Amino acid sequence: MSDWTWEYNPDAEHVVGNLSEPYRRDVEDLARRIAEAIGVRRIGHPFDIQESASGVKTHAEGPVMIWYQEDYRDDVVLILRAQHYLAPAADQDGEE
Image (cartoon, rainbow, N blue to C red; front, top):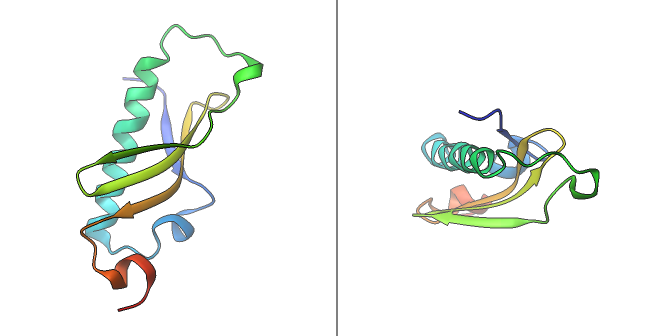
């Protein structure tokens, strides 16, 4: 188990506020798995001030796609954007 966590950036309302609860859970499950995988990958890598954060990365699994950054200063994955391809159009952009 790593110390890596994840959080929405800037906040949940901006990233997944338009998704209903079941779709949000899918996004959050994937965010948790990404944080765990990064924690394992970073074992033995000392912090380097020159490498304080990654660029924007994407990962898709099933119907969920997440855009994120790895913040090495705080051992946190910042979820910047999420798309759930099974969510109705109203959930994705507020329109029907």
